[in-house]
Length: 259
Image 1 (spheres, rainbow, N blue to C red):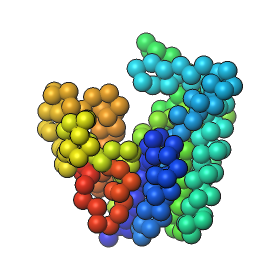
Image 2 (cartoon, rainbow, N blue to C red; image 1 turned 180 degrees about the vertical axis):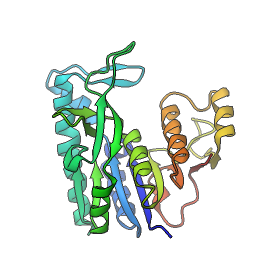
Image 3 (spheres, rainbow, N blue to C red; image 1 turned 120 degrees about the vertical axis):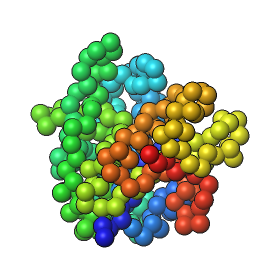
Image 4 (cartoon, helix red, strand yellow; image 1 turned 30 degrees about the vertical axis):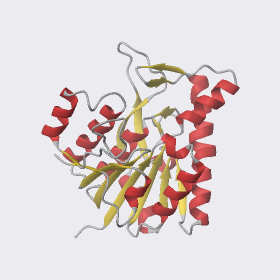
């Protein structure tokens, strides 16, 4: 039987809320199984870029990463946010290690080709160094990945944190029984966005298509759900979406995604 491994991606609104972040990290640190944490930091990066006079460009909700923006993203994601999380986990007795995809060649990617839109220094993932990550996990370290990959030729790349979490879960699934958690400010996928308690507890492929047809799943939730199904199709054992309480042993209010 494979050892259990949880890959948890923490959303930006939780990162920005000190109280919720501390509660989340407490819940995370108490997980008994091996675990990996993935985070972004887009809101803080946008704020810092503005203070530095660097315009943050977006299209269809996605960030355009030019050379100056990449510098800010690297400072915020790989520096301030990542090391703040690692320090907090150390204080909770969890021996964490902060990483970008360039560290240990853990996440390889290529610069997204220019089609209708030039996203700049944005990376699409090619591979995960599961063997090295496994060495860290077996050494009782908790990897904390920021949303930065690299191309193997000296170039860092801004990469969607949801996608990094999904690809890490896929890459580790041949070694572990992997569960992927998307933890954000809502209790799960909602039937009614105005009602935080209207959680859809289970979504499969048929239900997903129905919810898209009804315009219940749209915008930012759509790529998150696509990452969920991509992971499940690549042998990830289980995928869950919910808020910070989802990691508690007695929690039952969140969304489970299946094929």
